[in-house]
Image: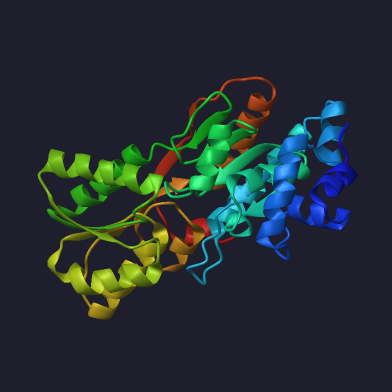
Length: 329
């Protein structure tokens, strides 16, 4: 079996340098990194931790790959629920879990990411918050080197399943409920991120509703930011009958803007985060059980690791009107 010493010898570097390259440490020159990676490929070197896991026929470890929302000062409740749900279910299934973040791999190529994950004995991955522009992650999934579950992204292959709610249907239902309750015709829709899978699906849901009820709709991009939603509402909200937001955080920003302008417009959100209950105004929203979605994703990943083929898994949601008394403990 090829050892790390063999790699170091062929590359003409120290063993510690090989270790740094394999584990993705930044303080290595690009020239050295390329040279070591070439030797790793040529010798088909597999780190000892991976070899040990495979030889003992252990299931390996699961990585939770999370895209943290760093554009808000609010605690990211959704990601915390995701992590909690996954870890609790992994404990039930006797799976070892580590949590990693997108920001850790911004400078890595797909090949470097694969080697890093293998060096950590990763055999299964759950990916949260992936967009259409995350090319390295798309390549990682397409490589089929790992069993993968993606949350809210319609990507399926033999080794990959997609888990999440029907965003198109949910957006249609919560907007329709709010529009019919208030007899609205002119809609300001504050969408999420242009490159987001959920944004695309929710826009399709709004398109269905506009066609069916013969509404007019102005779409603006809020980037899931409370501040941007506030500014958009300040600019356009006065001339619209309703503000439909693709997230609760943006709905809070829209409601604050309407309050500052001293005008009433119905607002609805999406997600069902606890923070909605503290706003002081009741709003319709789509409640997702993020911990439940993540637990279901862990179950699906365990099935994939056991030989099942990838598929689409739809999880439940509900339409709610968030109130303070519903959330206090």
